[in-house]
Length: 257
Ligand code: BGC
Image (cartoon, rainbow, N blue to C red; front, top):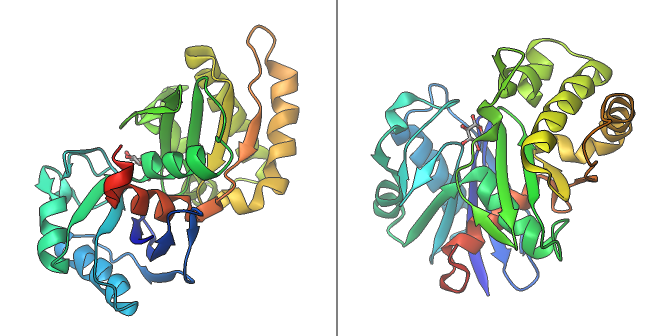
């Protein structure tokens, strides 16, 4: 069965029909740039453009880069503040004239990775982190999600982690891979101290370039982590499509999460 998934990010709105049996995009994804300012009505128009591109009719799952409870977007750290307190699910359903489910972007990516990707078969605590415009998090225990964890807003050395170590922070501060990896290693050490996970999964746009930074992160960890267990760090198997796949899974009645 195919369901449509759309991933709203700080830089792009991406979508495609998703094959839910295989956990893969059924067609090549289509992307439009996220408008700035990212006011709800213009972003909704972007989502419509992506869905209409495929001539899709049927349920649509959408991710949003903020806290989402019952379809209401409660925070919008990297989006226009007009999203705060908005019934985004209803707005999108009205615009697309179809049932819509809205979830946090990292939660959606995590659900896809747990079902089809790097988290599959892991029953202990798994933490998926997405590195993009912000840092998103999804925490699982026994395969079940604790939604809206927002670990990207933890403070590191007095600053929000996502301002220090997201992909955008790497660009904004012109950090080398080495310097960025050092910050990510410090962030992971902090999470490891708090949660003792059995696995970290790294998603978001950077997951495509894991060969550039995973060895560097490992080197930093070896030098600094003495007292804590060291959870393996693996890239998201579905890479940056995990959000689209997880969005579609959320819109399928069989996959209510
Ligand atoms: C938001 C999260 C989101 C993450 C990744 C953060 O700024 O608060 O909700 O998951 O960015 O997009």
